[in-house]
Image (cartoon, rainbow, N blue to C red; front, top):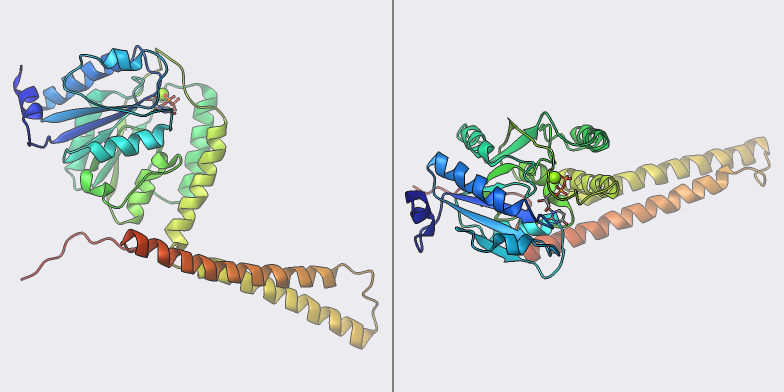
Length: 322
Ligand code: UDP
Ligand code: MG
């Protein structure tokens, strides 16, 4: 057994790197990936652990993993999705730095060193940027559009949030649980909490074994997730500003329209029975009130949310006493 393995396997001693990989029907990829990760970590001279999360594979993925060392294998009972797999893997990780990557050999473990180098510049998270992507035209097209939209809406300043190859300080995940398909937005979520997010160009390979697990539906889900993050980013601790503000504007418009109609009727003797405006005015007032009340309720919900989790909407880096 070589030195690095010994370090990684020594009981009670935490490794420096935890490499977390989700696997869903990746027969033919898992073994090779394990070897490449091991080689890359050993070349860096860092202690490491490899965590594979089998996301309910129905092919020979788990069999492929038999006999691989070192390996922590987390097995889901069924397919819960890539985000859940990342979350589970990250929660069993003990390393100081968590590296995530795809299990289909499209990300290159040899790039881990690049991520770590960038991290040394003072970042808490470093995201890979697949600047020369080896995917189909449609996939690249959708991904680029999504990235553009994300830049406008969320402003997280990185080019390629969907790249799974990323490095994190483990403390980043203290207050983060990943739901839905949120793993693509982890940098945005973390930036929101004040962590420093960097980026580095990484290589990308075409998929050789197995098939992609996603289709066009991902675009739709991604968009909805993006709107949710935008909301959290801007209004999570003050929902009334969004809903109440919108409500007041709507109601104000509605009242203005009704006043205008009243003036028309009283002073100019206009007939309102064939005009649509009285209805529009009433509609706007009602919608406005609804929105305002919704904002109040959202405020109450958010207060219970933070109370239940015993967290606040701010994060503290450290507390010094002297
Ligand atoms: N994956 C997973 N669960 C799923 C879908 C995907 O664990 O429900 C894993 C998959 O095995 C791979 C990674 O997530 O390691 C990325 O999936 P894929 O290559 O299909 O996505 P693409 O590269 O096409 O965006
Ligand atoms: Mg892939």
